Image (tube, rainbow, N blue to C red; front, top):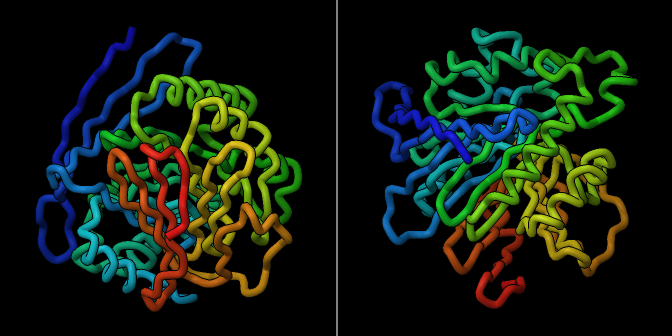
Length: 344
């Protein structure tokens, strides 16, 4: 039995004026048995009846407008207006190089508020944390004070976003990396809220597995910062691949979306059919940094900046990757009715 506590809140954004965001977020605290950790569930209620759900996805962006971040932001605004997007997903590494120093760090304005100023981008941003975010004050990014400063901002370690036909499962992947604990080099990570690590990781794995199993959504998509399958600079994140991939396969997940590698990438796993989508081109990119990969699986690898869109209906999900000039790099369509994917 679930005991659901529903908190309803209309959220507003504020730049020079305040207008209501075209979304209502319902916070559901999922209480199961004491052995299963709580996941917060946010509900996105579409305001466009019988229309597709339109989403922008960007990652690895927070560089105060440098490394083409501002150009990516401009094109996101153009595409966002064209598609009348519902919300934005950020795949982490929100603030370089070392996260935020606190809730009053000006980087929040310099890298987010004053960069993504297009009217079309004044929708809720659902964020996960990346490894660079963990090098700063993690609690600052999780704080409601940032949401008071800019009501677009929603950031949690792990949570569920229920958008009706699709559920997104946002997962905190950084604590899974062993070397961040055993060999952090000259970096300092903020592990408050994560220790003891073993209990945190086992609880999160159990919780995500349970939530995916309970989901009745037509589409199930998992979002994390770190790669599971990637031909980019970092390659596969072994710890995440070993511990999460069996869950994704067992629970019939449609796609895994990540950042971490500073590129745009699409891999279709030949065994499971899961789509691995990297959107880590929000600012600095790594030219020519690609590892060998099976060309039957690797549908796109672009070593430049850009972003991705998703358009989802009950029967179809369209994926489009864009560069900093708004040029379409790659499109793909997934069909539930036909139960296969076909390149456009």
